[in-house]
Image 1: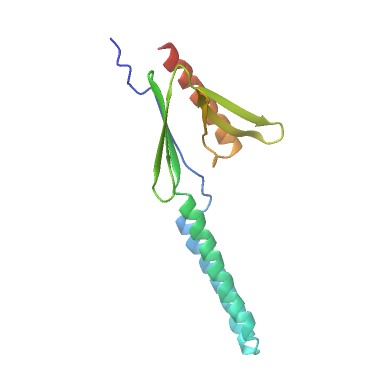
Image 2: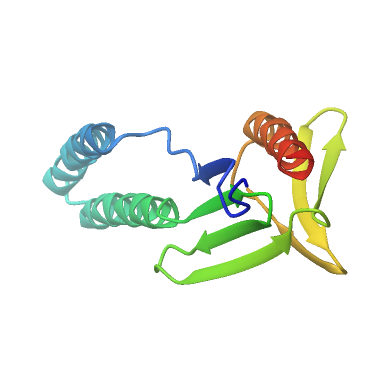
Length: 158
């Protein structure tokens, strides 16, 4: 007798970050050097407010990158078994929310826009619905939708 709780599909979705940690430090070094040079030059001419704004620019850029990397710690785990579909959403702060759906009743709704591709994925059952992979780009959403739909079909048919 097959194990009905055996997992047939598991995916971890996470936001893409195009700049690595090394790239971040290189970028910050270049920006700091350029604005530092401009700020020191402005100070030499007595334009001290320019130097203050150069420091502020570097601080704001650093803060924006930190917020971006923090939001990149969010992820979603999606598992499909013959018995259930489990979606675990983890926030950047580490808070976990679990959503469970019966495999036979779970439905994936894919929203497509002609020029943009897949803009939204919703998983629902019995009047309850959640959005999956909101942080993915349209191509990744489409790829995930295909793989998830196939896994859902396989889990239903055994």
